[in-house]
Length: 152
Ligand SMILES: [Zn+2]
Image 1: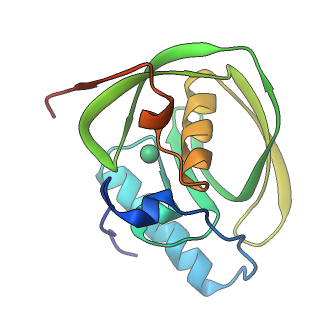
Image 2: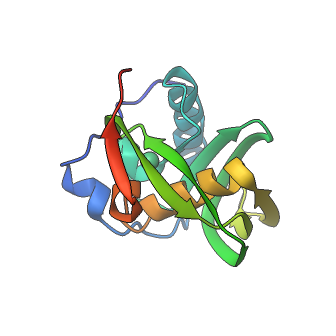
């Protein structure tokens, strides 16, 4: 396990579309372990593989509801709307107001390749949507009504 460097905005890798994960192997397990350690150290709500320089469709979400590893995630259904502040470990010192679905239903694989589903609500749904955007090269600042500087 290790803490990985978080890529910052301006790096092209954050703008690329990630590839599906095809090998559910030790390398994937090590990546997910490192992403967990990194998001906890950075006190983030989530982290996507491209943020640590890996162009694969894998994210971790660490919220009150628990810690989730989502590999090859797909949003099956989205309902409602919520508008609120969001930040990103790759866009330091900023936050922005973003409207997201209130509830999302997601299908994903676990680290062993088993397909699963979950329903996320509120901040959990926001974090899932934010992380999944990273897999398609989208940053929250692309969707934000406004972005402001914050003191860290
Ligand atoms: Zn982010």
